[in-house]
Amino acid sequence: MLSNRPITLRNLRFNPLDSVTFRMEPRRQKVPYEIQNDEDVDIIVKWKSTRARTFNTQPNYAIIRSKTKMTFQLVFKGMERGGNTPADRFTAVISAIKPTDQPAKQIWKLHELRSELLIGLKHKKFVFVIFEGVNEPEWWNRSVLGEDEPILPNFGIDKDDEEDAELQNNAMRAGAYQHVNLQLDPPGDPNQ
Image: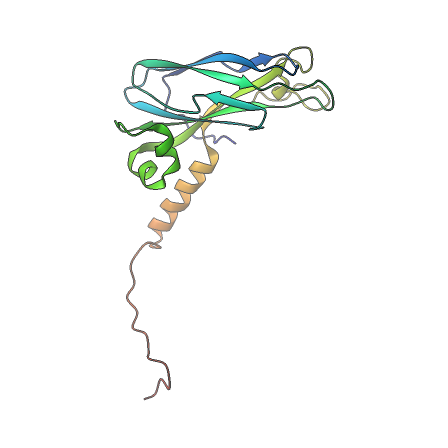
């Protein structure tokens, strides 16, 4: 989920802030979602969702230049009402990025480009889905019994990314990335 580490991308604005609302019906619906980048660096965004066959985002990958904003369309493909109360969300994975003309999708898909262009740790922004008349506002801060729970942050450092960076830093400090030359004995009797 999210790390307790301080956020490094502090000058991003999200509208709406926490959630979007759809109607639980079989027709396709779109809701605009705006990210304003007031940082001094460009950012790259990749969207995910809890159910890829039911939700998507247009565009799914984007670079938002410094001091600009971009509007995405969060899309619900529709479904019939019934069954369990859904607990869905969209997630924007966001990172600062060096200036580039490379397409955002290509950067996310190619590890070499990501390593070269991304700056610092990745952040995540959660946008929770409310289905009108089905689940209640701020359902993500309530227990399954409907009791209030501590308010969860919806923007922060990606815990997986932080753990990967921490493992690499620890390995480097411990000398795990040093080159070691070993002479290998030829096959046969080592006493010859």
